[in-house]
Length: 135
Image (cartoon, rainbow, N blue to C red; front, side, top):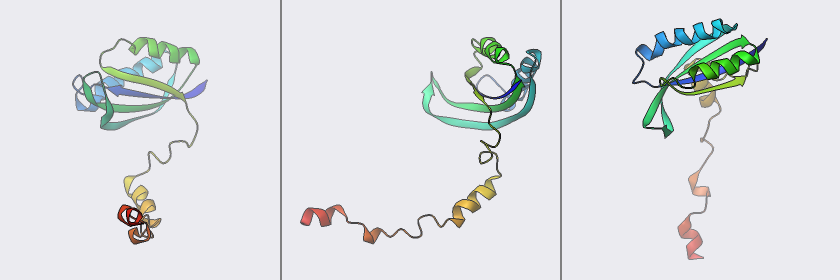
């Protein structure tokens, strides 16, 4: 059995409480297909860069599961026509690939601050449009 990562985007108008009950249905479906759920995380409600149909937001759920490839195809078939699921994508899971995503926010912000981003950047050293046009 291989490890897969499945990302579900749920319609927030069709679920309550960030889709906790629907998430339990998804986990039951994975188990009924012979898989085991290693991790399930709600990534909260997010705004889309481009709308999906008439939806501008969605609730993201991330699952890591161990199952066979036939179970992945069956999972797609099971939720393909479900109107609560806006999108479903499944990837092969690689250990450690998403360690940065699930770090606590404070640690991530500290790393960005320690790099002194933009402190060494001085706008006066860059040529401006007006100085180029004068030449």
